[in-house]
Image (spheres, rainbow, N blue to C red):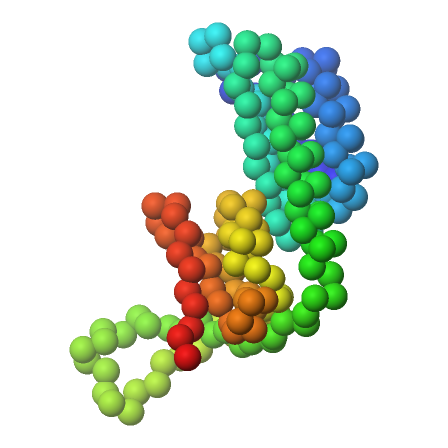
Length: 183
């Protein structure tokens, strides 16, 4: 587990770093696939803020807390992360073996040319091509995965209720859109 601690308007003492590392070790015991953790400790007037972002199993989880005491703020954030990770793990266990999902191919096209000037027989250049496995999950679980992952903008999944490919997209304003095919 890679841990980075950053301080804004606060001196990062060894005691503070040790407190953060000790608390983060508890997360590692409850969820053993934590890869990267970034901690930001900051002070604004009398408010002590702790923000923690972590990557585990391909998801990003973020939590923050503001309090009068930095150590209380650290405890609160770790507790929030622990709850989120346990909820995610229980969702994974409850869906194990429900369905295989589908493998789909996604291509990114080069649209650099002016669309009005394109000839009718013009085909776009494929810039990137990848195969994505669309897991069979419910729409609620897909929304939860998108909320837990702040830097993921698109989630392709097989809707467990309809067995159809669905997409959830994060809009520029942060809202989520659900795309479902009609038959």
